[in-house]
Length: 339
Ligand code: DAH
Image (cartoon, rainbow, N blue to C red; front, side, top):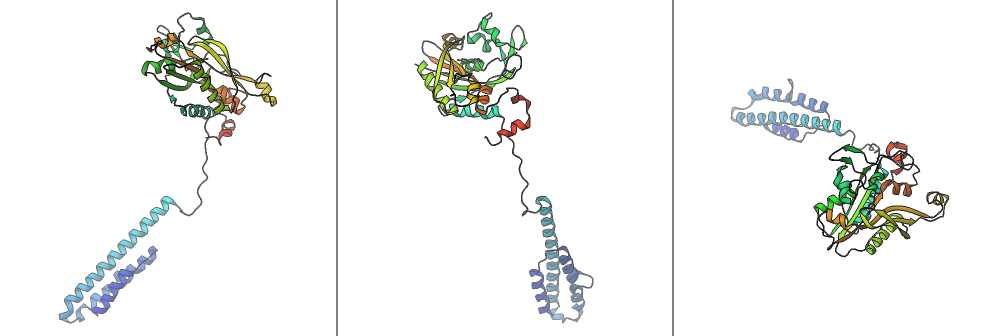
């Protein structure tokens, strides 16, 4: 009798089930009204008194083991069910992932940042809503300076003037006010001008400003940096600098790259000359250094500024600047493969 109970304890401990029905059958077999345990308890009176204690203990062990087994098996099955509901079928093929694309302005901006960070330039930013000092006066454009007219400014407030910055050159001033030379920084950002919108011009566009200030910086340093940039960015190694005028640089120049005249598009975009203008630059005017509390007898530097849209239009042969702002997915999706 006792041996039988011990055997049953072993069986109970070994028992496994993968379905709720098997657990229920097990429960009925051992713990049901007509189950084994009730039968065995009924046998109790037939057991010799000397063995009753041991037999009773064994029966209790069997009962507890059966009850525990039912509980753990139920729990296990329930949590497996929960996991299935949560993860679904773990062997199924995954859903296709819909990839987005970066905006071409961001792609080109990141490329420019990448090229300049390789030669030690940091990235800086300034506010889009500017005051007169940082957008004009400190950049050697005092009140009534005729060059202010060319900038078609959106004013937000008058006296004191608060405006939407017309160029990222304002960040030059802010950077110099807050940092000591040596300075090597580029400042990408959005700029605003009250211009008629056309295929070539928009009232909102993007620029990247560059600024380099140190002791003994010369025009040759500027030229070399520009050449490095055009090689890296466009794979073109011929540039020319045409004398120009900007109030904040002296001397000033406009940079053209030799694009070539191989295709019909080359003819069209270079108007048959093979040359393309890509940015303005120059040696920072001593007055600008003074305005930003940098000693022009000790330090010199160069600056440059370029339009991101223009460069993106050249690189991707985009015919109309308005396409950048329409967010037409048929246009944007074409940049999916570019990081
Ligand atoms: N701020 C000029 C513009 O918006 C671009 C520019 C030209 C920036 C010459 C410069 C520079 O730093 O040296 O047209």
